[in-house]
Length: 114
Length: 111
Image 1 (cartoon, each protein chain N blue to C red):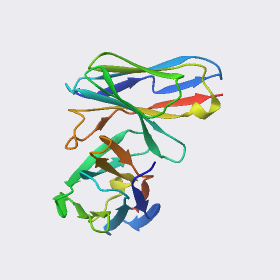
Image 2: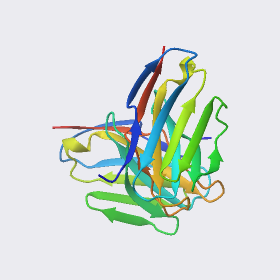
Image 3: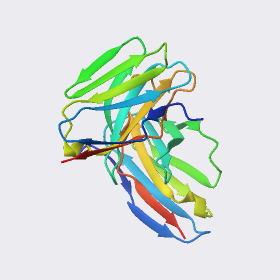
């Protein structure tokens, strides 16, 4: 199936731990994103990569480090997890970063920090 | 900062009725997009309207854009229970080259 897939779907972890969320897209898109959706469903962009290069970094704490080994993958590593990091994290991709593009989302990764 | 603001925040209608959702934004845009999110799922793109367009249709969806009022509306005609979801408007501005989402509208369609 052509899609944006991310793992794990659910993650429960303790404060202070380090965790990673993996994302892969097989749509052939050049641009990939990480979005964070809070408990009130507010969706905010965190990072955007175009062909493995960082394009957007929305003043996210440096405990969050995205890594793009190739243009089909964009992983998110989070160090020293805090309670406030609990949210749903969505990976997404688009054909390019231009204005005419629509964004294709993964199914989300539910992170709960306890 | 948040760009789009949807209105109402929640809407409950009977199956077969039309649902109208509004979105207002603050700065000039290249395009405006509507997305749907079913409970526990990712967002799915519904429709894109460019800043030089005033109306667009896709199946039971009708989107309008009024750039003078900086607002858009999404109309779903003959709603179905399966339309129950959250709907988000998102604006693309060339200035920051990113898609900024509103808070979303929760639509409940009663069978």
